[in-house]
Amino acid sequence: MGLALRLYESLTEAPDDTTRFRLIVDTIDALEQQWPRGGDVALRSDVRESELRLQKEIEQVRSELKKDIAELRADMHKEIAELRADMHKEIAELRADMHKEIAKLRGEVQKDIAELRSEVQKDIANLHAAIERTKVDLLKWIVPLMLGQVAALAALVKLL
Image 1 (tube, rainbow, N blue to C red):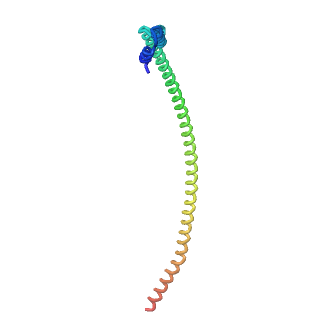
Image 2: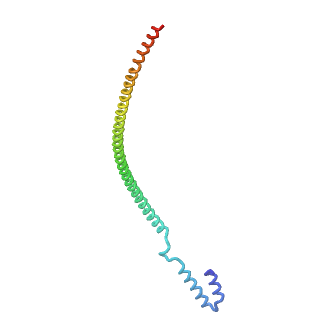
Image 3: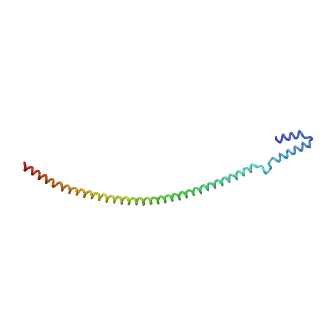
């Protein structure tokens, strides 16, 4: 129930004027208690002053944020540069290791190729020797057989 309605009901029920006046005074006092005091009410100038202070603080925070962002960017660029340098260093080390391994493997492959060549040359020499022996063996058989055929033909020619 509102204050005005309570006042109305109290006034209609009051037995005399003194009580009614007392109710009116109490109601006005209650209203004064609810109203803001002079220092509690903000004036336009107070609001404007607070607004200007807040704008100034916002600008300070904004400039601090920009400064912090710039510092973070600088730190990030520095860290990225360090990481790049580390990566380039590691890549160079890996390349050097790879070149060493390739050289090592190349040496092993060349060694294996040399061994295979010598084995193949030995096999070829063995084949040449076997072919020569086979030639000699064939000549041992062919020459006497040819002489035998010539003798047999000569004998047949005499018989005829």
